[in-house]
Picture (cartoon, helix red, strand yellow):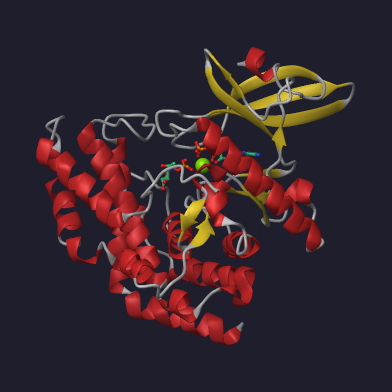
Length: 363
Ligand code: ADP
Ligand code: GN1
Ligand code: MG
């Protein structure tokens, strides 16, 4: 991998190149370079082309969005080198390398920051909310039609349910027996799968350019302050709804434990963290958010968490072909945590609505 990294315009001599991060899709490497006393760190990724078939289109999207955000951040008086992903070109001038080893790209590593798998302080999650809210606001006028729709129907929960039903029907690994309870949990909620789609199709909520993968570890956080600095993982930026982005952040950040916690007694939905994120998100988005979107944030949180659990369960039934897994029932363990969160959110739906309403009122 160090040899591949050598094909990019890195400053200094490469001193190490090791696997990094906890993404479920791409392979990520941390590349350290030295030039005299100065150390520079880069992030190199081998993009998973089994998931992202159109690598060239994906890179076009990433470049466009990076350039657009950079300008917007500059206009608002921010520091684009710190608050926005920045690609490092290959030595031949291209923004990526495609060779027999795969499809690669490099980003600058933002110094003093890291990604977290779990929220460590209320402020951290408030700040993540501000960062993702601002991300949506900055992209409000981005010309959506210039983007390739890299993964069509990515958050089409109805189609995701269809895929789940097909996986269950074929049960190719003979695993259905081991997850009856989880299967029943999903089936009992078949009636709510179309919630967000209905709102989009009726025009009640707008289609926006969204991130679509706003889990906590897709925002870099400054270690010393806990402040969210830079949103990463632009691979799924496509037209969508902010209910997706709000929902995905809530499902990952309001979990009192990890996405793959085996001990469900540790997995709860934190109302306190929900409130923090809502306040941050509304502050970041400002007046961009519509009343209908606000009224449906809780729906987004429930549905995206349900969808994510269902995707893990589908992959479990299919034999773990999509998400990276470390052990046999890893995807089932992940599905269980998501369903626990869904159940707790549904029990408290009215209270969560109140939290959104008062956060809006107090802003
Ligand atoms: P995946 O699709 O596999 O999740 P990501 O682009 O999210 O790929 O990268 C995986 C992890 O690598 C992120 O969760 C984050 O921890 C880290 N990472 C990605 N880009 C950067 C970056 N520019 N600087 C620092 N860390 C990064
Ligand atoms: C994947 O790529 P990563 O690890 O940030 C997935 C998301 C899921 C998430 C669950 C392209 O995110 O949709 O919500 O895992 N990304 C893709 O942790 O499928
Ligand atoms: Mg990621």
